[in-house]
Image 1: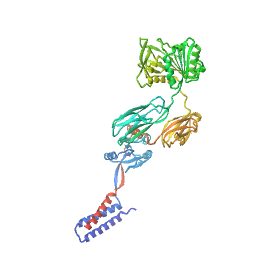
Image 2: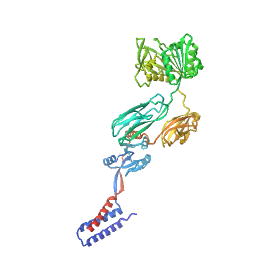
Image 3: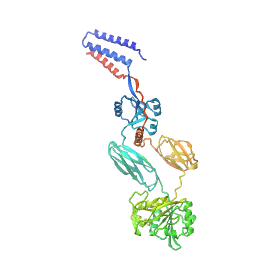
Image 4: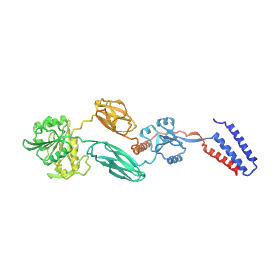
Length: 595
């Protein structure tokens, strides 16, 4: 209840006069003036507490300060001291004294239409939230990022035998930090991050088994606490191919390649010509098949055929036609290797341009290929190179990609390859198994027809717990009634809402995952795909870094400004000075009487 000002003044004067009369009546005349003054001070403080005064503050109508996560009070104080007139202070999803809480930026704009400039203090806002500010000029006052990963990329799905290479940026705030790649229960690779630096890193590890794994980027802070970020990786078993080797004569090249493919689990059939019309045959990891003659039924059992130019020339016309049909109509891959010193173009099987690059008939030279990470292999080569045409990518080359040694081109459904790499087994003899296997893996993968799509596949394969995610699944009749279940206990882990589709084989669902870890997405008891759910606390530094990048980008945009007058606002005067004054005055009067 508000006390009328005239009544309050009458009461204050009467109370002050009464206290003055009591002071004058006392026999002890010492400190009389002090008692009278303090009595009136007490009366004034009491009156001001009952009816506190107000003051007029001037605020900038066109500017505002927004406090966000990680803001520093000293930054806010410095900003308020620098700006005149002072802008109003708001906060977004963070509690702060003397700041008006904002939960919706679109609503903020509607209630504050005059604001044209927003000073954002802290780590900033997400890109979607910044978009709600429309044409406001954003001025960032960003806080330093905590130690952690700013960005990271790694292969989400690999084939067993490939490396997991993790690349990104890391910032270390307080000290030099050792960053580890922790995989399979041990630290596999590491790099030192300098103090105060934003530094790139690259770590790698080669899994030994197939499956679903969660590796970690790991480091320690100044208090020796361990921090880590999760790196889920799906390691798939390698695709097993059936390969037919046709050789004009028994050779070490065929023997080593047969053994290497067989050790990896591939099916291999070999046919080597011993003399005219007589062949030596062998099969490994395959049912017994007759390869003495190429027939459509036989070629249906294979994914790739490797042969040398002499073996190709010795084939009958019917066998060549059968090969062509298998390539064009069934997607069979075929590679013809030239071992002689005079390679020539062959219709369909070797439609290539051969260019002499050396006067020597046989040379040793470097061989490089796509994806090779180690030093180049040195192998015996012919004095020729291939000049790739349009639509003929180079799989391997010598000194430059223009001097191609292996090229491919499409014929119907299949791929046809041409190779000038005569022998690769010297790499195996020299103990360079990684180079040897890498070369043939690249060649065979390029030649083989693509693997069939899985019965169920989804995008994306990562999500965050308690956050809505849209999953688009493909798989025909297996998709309409899918479930998301945890791999740990096989129980449903999230509800699926919707089921919209543009194509009958694709369905889009919205889900809110409730538990972290690997999950299966698919029909119960049927085919499924893998989905990983991150915890809500994952990649915090990266999220803050993305906010700061978004607000830096927004701050560079030009805006239109209108002239708006300042805001004058009546505010209540703080009560604590009056309360303190009343307490001190009463204390003085009580103590003075006792002395």
